[in-house]
Image (cartoon, rainbow, N blue to C red; front, side, top):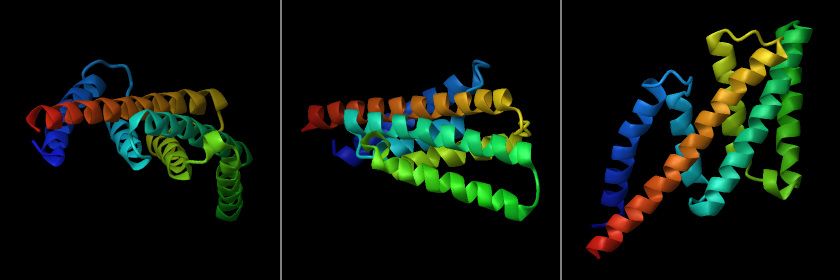
Length: 165
């Protein structure tokens, strides 16, 4: 079997499982964030290295987003003030890439954007660090679970493609 067909089968089967895991247990995992993490796994090159890079940078992005949201929620203010806070936080996000472990900027952006989107769209009290950190933790758990699903789908597809070769 060629690799694309093997990936389609492994990803399709695991996507059904991932959806069940997120929707069927009440643990608060987010299927959409799982899929973002899954895509990020492949985007960062896959394998153990892609899993590690993606997960670490999702955490970094979520931490920066959490701090930005809390500052915005505490300071309040105009769109100009909020924009400046977001801009400064993104500068910090990207400057983190000077540290080799934080150098996968796209994965960090996925963590940042996913955390900010969930908090803002679900009505989390952004001035409350506990509320934002709790929400960010669920987003990060979902993103990292997606990284793991990506890793497993890659391995399964590789086994299927080899078995037919």
